[in-house]
Image (cartoon, rainbow, N blue to C red; front, side, top):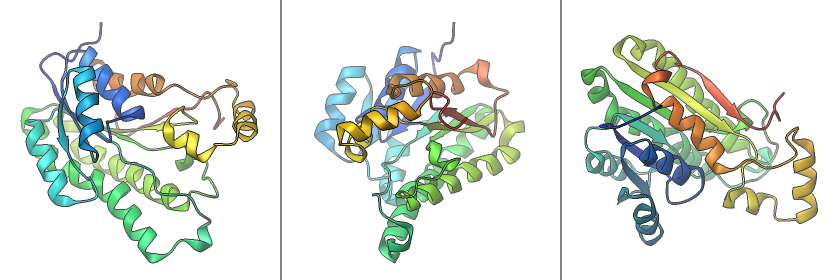
Length: 240
Protein backbone atom coordinates (compact mmCIF):
# COMPACT_ATOMS: atom_id res chain seq x y z
CA UNK A 1 0.00 0.00 0.00
CA UNK A 2 1.28 3.44 -0.88
CA UNK A 3 2.27 5.47 2.18
CA UNK A 4 3.80 8.89 2.86
CA UNK A 5 4.39 8.63 6.60
CA UNK A 6 7.10 11.01 7.77
CA UNK A 7 6.93 13.20 4.65
CA UNK A 8 6.07 16.90 4.72
CA UNK A 9 3.97 18.41 1.96
CA UNK A 10 3.11 21.95 0.90
CA UNK A 11 0.07 22.39 -1.33
CA UNK A 12 -0.84 25.81 -2.69
CA UNK A 13 -4.23 26.90 -3.97
CA UNK A 14 -5.61 24.32 -1.58
CA UNK A 15 -8.66 25.89 0.03
CA UNK A 16 -10.95 24.24 -2.54
CA UNK A 17 -11.10 22.19 -5.72
CA UNK A 18 -8.23 20.07 -6.96
CA UNK A 19 -5.72 21.61 -4.56
CA UNK A 20 -7.82 20.69 -1.53
CA UNK A 21 -8.50 17.20 -2.91
CA UNK A 22 -4.76 16.65 -3.37
CA UNK A 23 -4.00 17.85 0.15
CA UNK A 24 -6.67 15.51 1.55
CA UNK A 25 -5.24 12.47 -0.24
CA UNK A 26 -1.69 13.29 0.87
CA UNK A 27 -2.96 13.46 4.46
CA UNK A 28 -4.75 10.14 4.06
CA UNK A 29 -1.46 8.58 2.96
CA UNK A 30 0.19 9.82 6.15
CA UNK A 31 1.97 13.01 5.08
CA UNK A 32 2.11 16.10 7.27
CA UNK A 33 0.45 18.73 5.09
CA UNK A 34 0.49 22.51 5.03
CA UNK A 35 -2.01 24.18 2.73
CA UNK A 36 -1.82 27.72 1.39
CA UNK A 37 -4.28 30.04 -0.31
CA UNK A 38 -5.37 33.68 -0.26
CA UNK A 39 -8.61 33.63 1.76
CA UNK A 40 -7.84 32.90 5.43
CA UNK A 41 -11.34 31.95 6.60
CA UNK A 42 -11.94 29.44 3.82
CA UNK A 43 -8.37 28.17 4.15
CA UNK A 44 -8.62 27.60 7.90
CA UNK A 45 -11.92 25.75 7.51
CA UNK A 46 -10.41 23.51 4.83
CA UNK A 47 -7.35 22.80 6.98
CA UNK A 48 -9.51 21.80 9.92
CA UNK A 49 -11.56 19.42 7.75
CA UNK A 50 -8.54 17.45 6.57
CA UNK A 51 -6.23 17.82 9.57
CA UNK A 52 -3.65 20.05 7.90
CA UNK A 53 -1.77 23.18 8.90
CA UNK A 54 -2.43 26.37 6.95
CA UNK A 55 -0.72 29.59 5.96
CA UNK A 56 -2.24 32.50 4.10
CA UNK A 57 -0.28 33.20 0.91
CA UNK A 58 -0.78 34.94 -2.41
CA UNK A 59 1.63 32.93 -4.55
CA UNK A 60 2.01 35.77 -7.04
CA UNK A 61 4.08 37.54 -4.37
CA UNK A 62 7.62 36.47 -3.55
CA UNK A 63 7.34 37.35 0.15
CA UNK A 64 4.20 35.23 0.50
CA UNK A 65 5.84 32.27 -1.22
CA UNK A 66 8.80 32.51 1.11
CA UNK A 67 6.48 32.65 4.14
CA UNK A 68 4.56 29.59 2.97
CA UNK A 69 7.74 27.58 2.45
CA UNK A 70 9.04 28.59 5.86
CA UNK A 71 5.76 27.68 7.55
CA UNK A 72 5.74 24.22 5.96
CA UNK A 73 9.21 23.29 7.25
CA UNK A 74 11.44 20.85 5.39
CA UNK A 75 9.22 20.23 2.38
CA UNK A 76 9.52 16.78 0.81
CA UNK A 77 6.48 17.14 -1.47
CA UNK A 78 5.52 20.33 -3.28
CA UNK A 79 2.22 20.61 -5.09
CA UNK A 80 2.15 23.92 -6.94
CA UNK A 81 -1.33 25.06 -7.83
CA UNK A 82 -2.54 28.53 -8.74
CA UNK A 83 -5.86 29.90 -9.90
CA UNK A 84 -6.27 30.19 -13.65
CA UNK A 85 -6.04 33.56 -15.41
CA UNK A 86 -9.38 35.05 -16.53
CA UNK A 87 -10.74 34.17 -19.97
CA UNK A 88 -10.55 36.41 -23.02
CA UNK A 89 -9.60 36.40 -26.68
CA UNK A 90 -5.88 36.30 -27.56
CA UNK A 91 -5.94 39.60 -29.42
CA UNK A 92 -7.51 41.34 -26.43
CA UNK A 93 -4.95 40.40 -23.75
CA UNK A 94 -3.23 43.53 -22.45
CA UNK A 95 0.16 44.00 -20.78
CA UNK A 96 -1.32 43.87 -17.29
CA UNK A 97 -3.03 40.52 -17.93
CA UNK A 98 0.18 39.00 -19.30
CA UNK A 99 2.16 40.29 -16.32
CA UNK A 100 -0.40 39.00 -13.82
CA UNK A 101 -0.48 35.58 -15.46
CA UNK A 102 3.32 35.44 -15.50
CA UNK A 103 3.58 36.17 -11.76
CA UNK A 104 0.63 34.05 -10.64
CA UNK A 105 0.83 30.99 -12.86
CA UNK A 106 4.48 30.73 -13.88
CA UNK A 107 6.68 32.53 -11.37
CA UNK A 108 4.73 31.09 -8.43
CA UNK A 109 5.96 27.62 -9.40
CA UNK A 110 9.50 28.86 -10.09
CA UNK A 111 9.68 30.53 -6.67
CA UNK A 112 8.12 27.64 -4.78
CA UNK A 113 10.60 25.25 -6.36
CA UNK A 114 13.47 27.59 -5.54
CA UNK A 115 12.35 27.56 -1.91
CA UNK A 116 12.26 23.79 -1.48
CA UNK A 117 14.72 22.33 -3.95
CA UNK A 118 17.97 22.68 -2.00
CA UNK A 119 16.48 20.79 0.95
CA UNK A 120 15.15 18.03 -1.28
CA UNK A 121 18.50 17.56 -2.98
CA UNK A 122 20.29 17.59 0.34
CA UNK A 123 18.03 14.85 1.72
CA UNK A 124 18.19 12.86 -1.51
CA UNK A 125 14.40 12.72 -1.88
CA UNK A 126 11.79 15.10 -3.24
CA UNK A 127 8.58 15.26 -5.23
CA UNK A 128 7.57 18.36 -7.20
CA UNK A 129 4.18 18.32 -8.91
CA UNK A 130 2.56 21.27 -10.66
CA UNK A 131 -1.11 21.27 -11.57
CA UNK A 132 -1.54 22.58 -15.11
CA UNK A 133 -4.32 21.91 -17.63
CA UNK A 134 -5.17 19.90 -20.72
CA UNK A 135 -4.92 23.22 -22.58
CA UNK A 136 -1.15 22.67 -22.59
CA UNK A 137 -1.89 20.05 -25.25
CA UNK A 138 -5.11 21.45 -26.69
CA UNK A 139 -5.15 25.25 -26.27
CA UNK A 140 -8.52 26.81 -25.52
CA UNK A 141 -9.25 29.87 -27.65
CA UNK A 142 -10.57 31.90 -24.73
CA UNK A 143 -7.73 31.06 -22.31
CA UNK A 144 -4.61 32.48 -24.00
CA UNK A 145 -2.74 33.49 -20.85
CA UNK A 146 -3.38 30.17 -19.15
CA UNK A 147 -2.35 28.27 -22.30
CA UNK A 148 0.99 30.06 -22.46
CA UNK A 149 1.88 30.13 -18.77
CA UNK A 150 0.95 26.52 -18.01
CA UNK A 151 3.01 25.39 -21.00
CA UNK A 152 5.91 27.37 -19.52
CA UNK A 153 5.46 25.61 -16.17
CA UNK A 154 5.44 22.23 -17.91
CA UNK A 155 8.67 22.84 -19.76
CA UNK A 156 10.39 24.41 -16.76
CA UNK A 157 9.79 21.26 -14.72
CA UNK A 158 10.77 18.99 -17.60
CA UNK A 159 14.06 20.86 -17.88
CA UNK A 160 14.61 20.83 -14.13
CA UNK A 161 14.06 17.06 -14.07
CA UNK A 162 17.13 16.64 -16.26
CA UNK A 163 19.21 18.37 -13.59
CA UNK A 164 17.85 16.84 -10.39
CA UNK A 165 16.81 13.28 -11.32
CA UNK A 166 20.10 11.87 -10.04
CA UNK A 167 19.47 13.58 -6.67
CA UNK A 168 16.31 11.60 -5.99
CA UNK A 169 13.98 14.45 -6.93
CA UNK A 170 11.14 14.08 -9.43
CA UNK A 171 9.47 16.92 -11.30
CA UNK A 172 6.15 16.23 -12.99
CA UNK A 173 2.95 17.98 -13.98
CA UNK A 174 -0.64 16.80 -13.78
CA UNK A 175 -2.91 18.24 -16.45
CA UNK A 176 -6.60 17.98 -15.55
CA UNK A 177 -9.28 17.90 -18.18
CA UNK A 178 -12.80 19.20 -17.58
CA UNK A 179 -13.05 18.76 -13.82
CA UNK A 180 -16.04 19.70 -11.66
CA UNK A 181 -14.53 22.69 -9.84
CA UNK A 182 -15.94 26.14 -9.19
CA UNK A 183 -13.83 27.54 -12.02
CA UNK A 184 -15.34 25.05 -14.47
CA UNK A 185 -18.81 26.00 -13.32
CA UNK A 186 -18.03 29.67 -13.98
CA UNK A 187 -16.60 28.96 -17.44
CA UNK A 188 -19.56 26.72 -18.38
CA UNK A 189 -22.41 28.25 -16.40
CA UNK A 190 -24.96 27.59 -19.14
CA UNK A 191 -26.50 24.15 -18.56
CA UNK A 192 -26.90 23.40 -22.26
CA UNK A 193 -23.30 24.35 -22.95
CA UNK A 194 -22.12 22.18 -20.04
CA UNK A 195 -23.99 19.19 -21.46
CA UNK A 196 -22.46 19.81 -24.89
CA UNK A 197 -18.98 19.79 -23.37
CA UNK A 198 -19.70 16.57 -21.48
CA UNK A 199 -20.83 14.90 -24.71
CA UNK A 200 -17.50 15.84 -26.30
CA UNK A 201 -15.61 13.88 -23.61
CA UNK A 202 -15.32 10.14 -24.31
CA UNK A 203 -16.09 9.44 -20.63
CA UNK A 204 -19.30 11.48 -21.07
CA UNK A 205 -18.87 13.34 -17.80
CA UNK A 206 -16.75 15.87 -15.98
CA UNK A 207 -13.96 14.54 -13.80
CA UNK A 208 -14.01 14.64 -10.03
CA UNK A 209 -11.25 16.59 -8.22
CA UNK A 210 -10.44 13.40 -6.27
CA UNK A 211 -9.60 11.62 -9.53
CA UNK A 212 -7.00 14.25 -10.39
CA UNK A 213 -5.75 14.22 -6.80
CA UNK A 214 -5.14 10.47 -7.02
CA UNK A 215 -2.60 11.01 -9.79
CA UNK A 216 -0.90 13.76 -7.78
CA UNK A 217 -0.74 11.61 -4.66
CA UNK A 218 0.75 8.67 -6.54
CA UNK A 219 3.47 10.86 -8.03
CA UNK A 220 4.43 11.78 -4.46
CA UNK A 221 5.11 8.19 -3.39
CA UNK A 222 8.29 6.13 -3.30
CA UNK A 223 6.78 3.85 -5.92
CA UNK A 224 6.69 6.70 -8.45
CA UNK A 225 10.43 7.40 -8.18
CA UNK A 226 11.12 6.54 -11.83
CA UNK A 227 8.38 8.77 -13.22
CA UNK A 228 10.18 12.02 -13.92
CA UNK A 229 9.82 14.94 -16.32
CA UNK A 230 6.36 13.76 -17.32
CA UNK A 231 2.98 15.32 -17.97
CA UNK A 232 0.13 13.14 -16.68
CA UNK A 233 -3.17 14.04 -18.36
CA UNK A 234 -6.32 13.19 -16.40
CA UNK A 235 -9.13 13.99 -18.83
CA UNK A 236 -11.43 11.04 -19.55
CA UNK A 237 -9.66 10.53 -22.93
CA UNK A 238 -10.60 14.01 -24.17
CA UNK A 239 -7.20 14.86 -25.68
CA UNK A 240 -7.12 11.54 -27.53
